[in-house]
Amino acid sequence: MGPHRNSDAMEPLAFALLASYSPPFVEHKFYDNRIEDIPYDEETDLVAITVETYTARRAYEIATEYKKRGVKVVMGGYHPTFVPEESLLYADCIVSGDAEELWPKLIHDFKKGKLQKIYRSNNLSSLEGIRPDRSIFKGKRYAPIHLVQYGRGCRFNCDFCSIKTFYGSYLGQRPIKDVVREIEELRFKHIFIVDDNIFSYKKQAMEFFRALIPLNVRWSGQVSIDVTQDDELMDLMQKSGCLSVVVGFESMDIKSLIQMKKGWNLRYGTYTDAIKKFRDHGIMVYGTFVHGYDHDTLDSFKYNLEFALESKFYLANFNPLTPTPGAPLYDRLKKEGRLINDPWWLDPDFKYGQAQFIPKNMTPAELTEGCFKARTEFNSFSNIFKRSLDLKANFSSPYHAAMFLASNLISKREIRKKQGRDLADQDKSFFIQKPRSI
Image 1: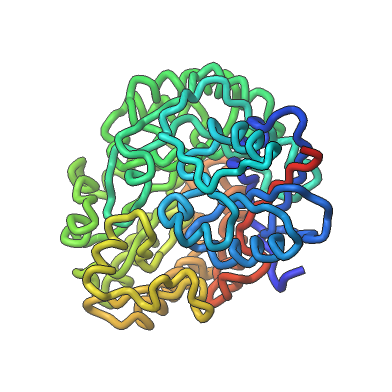
Image 2 (image 1 turned 60 degrees about the vertical axis):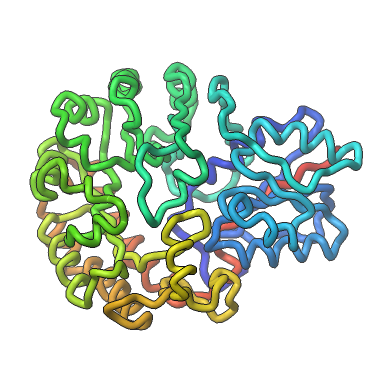
């Protein structure tokens, strides 16, 4: 076992979806390297690995171990989609884009010995009839919360994000009846809606929330700040069981917001007004911030931290700006010659939380340290206590209070354990699915 196992790991929805699309003659075995070791010598025919930029080096190490044993390796996810040539150095084939529509064909091609190098999806397939196969998670220890997807894509195009590059203008949504049926079958009645933005279409979002009300669930999800301008929508969020929301505030500096193409964050009023709307509806706020844009200074850490504490956020994250393939930010910084050890995700000296580029108004070391200090200060015991005094949201009910305390104690522990760790540690987020008897 590795030196650290994630205590906040949640079921990886991507593999439950993939398993549901596998032909009936395929036997699956699933391993999650965040919480368990991988039995490389167990008999298998084909290995599938999902790869994010942060996990690429570890994914390539896993792939190399399997290929030493003569096992074919398939990789999919955002990273292989954006850097296929790199991924194909380690995998026998990759899936570019969403895999569901391609997976059955890939399996049949493999069975016939005709596995292609690249399978490309146009990401436009119907989302009707999706039924994730969560049986692959049986016996594994995950947080008592299920991930559920309602829609895909995002209507915004932030500078640091690759979602728009991946999906383009596509904004797909599942039939509400399918999502309701899935939720009714779940073991836990606390769900996290993984959509990058649930509110692509207001009318459909309101229909979705109305359908959630009789299910008596509690849910969390990612939202854009503009939802606070619609009182009817906020009321439905509360009635449908919304417990907490992740909101990308990103910065207190309008110049930084404009550079990251998120100036619309302040188009709908002040941050303070928006936060009050959430709190008035008993919804806890998880605020996120990015540091390192060209107008950011060392004082930016202080301003963002003070704002997060004064707002009594449920949780908060202070991230060093991360240039990943597929995002406009990466292309710009690469062109300007500001990337450090590019490709940084393959650099054996790169550590978790470390800045990967040269900011304009601070050193990379100052960016790394500033984010870490803001995280640790926000999660100090004294500040956790002060934020718990929010009786409108954080401690508005016994369930809210329990979630607040559990989440903050886990966050406090994980921040110190993860900072400075090697990205190739065994306990990073890698998921393995092994079809057998093909």
